[in-house]
Length: 168
Image (cartoon, rainbow, N blue to C red; front, side, top):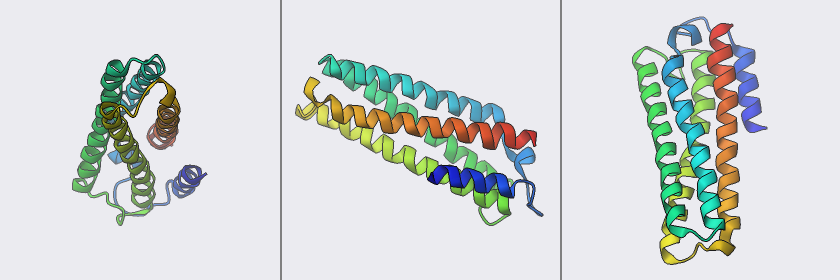
C-alpha cells in the first residue's frame, strides 16, 4: 500500500510541474532498463540460493546468495549514478513536483533494496557459522519473499514512472 500510494501521488502530479526538467527530458530508459535487468537477474540468483540451501548445498548457497547481493548492490550503484546525473541536470527533490515524487518513490525503493542486500549478506555470514542448514530454509525463504517483493515493486515503478511516464 505504501508504494501504491507513492505511485498514485506521482501519477496525480504528472504534468503539473511548472519548472525544471520533467520525465521526458530527464529519464534515461536504456540505462534504467539495464539496471532493471540486473535486479530481475538477482531474483533468479535468489531462487538458486533458496534451492541450494533446501538441498543442503551450503557452498552453492554461498555463491548464489553472494551473486544476489552483488547484483542488488549493482542496482543501487545504477540508482546512485542516476540520482547524481539528475542532480547535475537540475532535477532534485526541491525542483518540482516530479522531482519530489520521483526521489521519494525511488529513494524508498532503494532503501528497501539496501535492507535486502544487508539481509542477504547476513545470511551469507551465517552460513559460515553453521547457522544455515537444510532445516533453516524458512529464514532464507523469508529473505527470498522479501527480495522478490522488492523486485516486483521495481517492475511496477519502472513501468509506471519510466515507460508510461515518458509516454504521457
